[in-house]
Length: 228
Image (cartoon, rainbow, N blue to C red; front, side, top):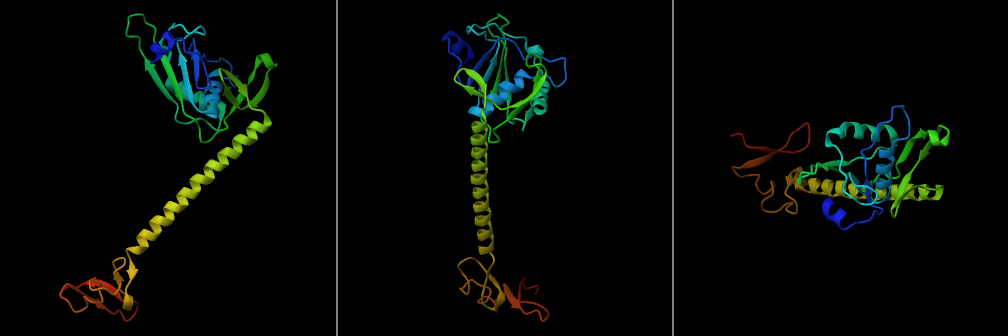
């Protein structure tokens, strides 16, 4: 898939970002994390792929898969993003043509919890700490303006409202289904749904050898199997 896209010189888009080198580890705690920024940008838009080992001119240059640390990448997301992005997967593609040009594909899903904010500071911004929501626009990464952040939150709350309504409907359906199995029959017994007082109800079976209704003087009538 990657080799074919490179051969076709498939350009970057809002859901595809070519990366020549693996994400670099910052020696300074709290410094801006480019990997977290790129993941958040994809998650805040519609999801997409970060492909490491392909240059800006869309040439296969490869990376060293031994340098890929899934746990470290996941930790960066947890530390630098609020809220973190879940469901990110890492696909390692070793070269099969003897060129040692391995590829790493990071698959970022569209997030139900967007917007995701990136926290950190950059030396080029005079060590100013920033808290921004990145997003993809065509082949570029930008940062949401205030009205875009507000819209992203409205969309998140709308998704949550739909999910909660669906859950409530499911709970009501299960509750009705369960209560229907324990429909009360005349005299206080319990019948199958839609069979109250029918020929198969406990009322009609009172004198049979299969079972009987017995009145508890200290409580309601209860159904029990005839022990005799």
